[in-house]
Length: 93
Image (cartoon, rainbow, N blue to C red; front, top):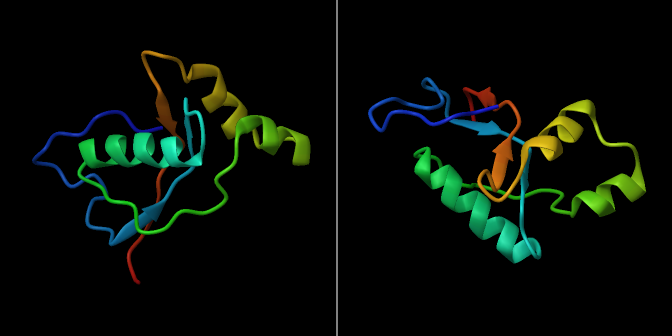
């Protein structure tokens, strides 16, 4: 998971982008995008593309979520409204 970064540090260590899963306390998909986008902006990151936005309840109904998602769900709360899994960086477009 990612904690805060210094404003002077490149959070991706020179990578051109990254994939990451996130869980956020949100009322709907638009609220989710707003919350996640704000927290990524605080890390000096921008969203290039969204994939598979669904509620945790929807995810669980489809299949058992990966262990990492279950762990993220345990720590998201009102004082920590968005949590990120490990960023998977890529160095070429």
